[in-house]
Image (cartoon, rainbow, N blue to C red; front, side, top):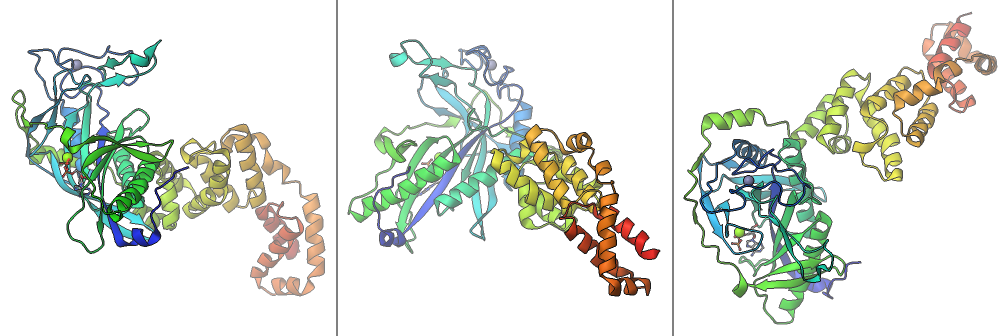
Length: 492
Ligand code: ADP
Ligand code: ZN
Ligand code: MG
């Protein structure tokens, strides 16, 4: 449970939150940004290290070309302008996990600037500006747990030291906790589509610091901002921001002032706590990195990288709506991951009706996944399976009812639809026509007027008969077979 400080609705209405986010994303290069050590996660501590990433005297950094390409690709996907020349800088601070005593980052000449992400909250779309995107190296990791009698022990793992990161800084354009959540969701989605990072928050591949202030509505100047650091899920960031909005309004309403500080979020309590004040803030004394040349990404290189930019989720959704006649909501679900969208499109190309494939995902798949607590990427029924089932219904080989049963079996057995369909041998079974013929005879006997019409050339009444037979068979009959048998009987 999140407890927020008591702030009246009236007080809340007087103020407007201003939020800017700083997101760090780890790039999935094979080797580190300034040396050839492996970036692999989870290896034994301090096994992927060398003089460069250990910060030993005299070791010199050499820039990883792939890291630059990944960063430029991400920048392009985020609509940034890529600077042809950018400069690496030393960000100086003293901390045990930073052996050199400085981090190589970029400062006044970052790799890319002036980007934007479109978000949509409660049906309203809004553009959130991206101030800058720059390249930097990660620090090592302090381990405070996992040792015997560890209360007083901290160990350092430098495997992460020198892993390439991009930092993406937003404009203070975000006006609510929900908008922040949406911005992060869209940002992660875009980065995942580019393939430059796995954005795994548990492994620290995506980290977010949130800056937040409040100001009286219609006041132009920003209020004093608080930075909330090291929040490890989007949900917690939303909670932390909700808490901060109320806390800051409370402070101002009680006549006090917000002082600039860094705070930490305790997700168990749903509260933020002061970590350090502005007086304790670092003075990073940035200066240009003397061991690296300016980074030049010229037009030709930019064009090469741009050529590898995949279709991005928003554009893809629009195209899928146009190409397959599906709804925006369908497209939203089907682009949940790039892999899923690829699977759907591959299936849609061979399926008789892509729209029916999309409908089945919504009507039959999502509910079953939800009941099992599965994400669509882990569905026992693949898109190929959905496509086959859609075709079988489309051609009348199986009924809607049979499809539901087969889906249930797929989920029970954890097997894909085609396998279960084979195992059940359903089509043969439903080709047992004697029972069906009895029903058909009865219905033909009971509707002489429609039989007359059919024989007079109005062949469309066959639809009426199919409907009656399906009803009488409680949806169990195979519509195509019903159709065949009906036509045969009506013509004799
Ligand atoms: P700093 O120099 O303290 O790191 P920056 O100007 O680099 O501050 O901004 C860091 C982040 O804080 C950016 O995302 C920016 O949009 C946001 N930000 C800046 N001023 C405010 C403010 N008054 N309220 C909320 N967010 C802010
Ligand atoms: Zn190294
Ligand atoms: Mg900053």
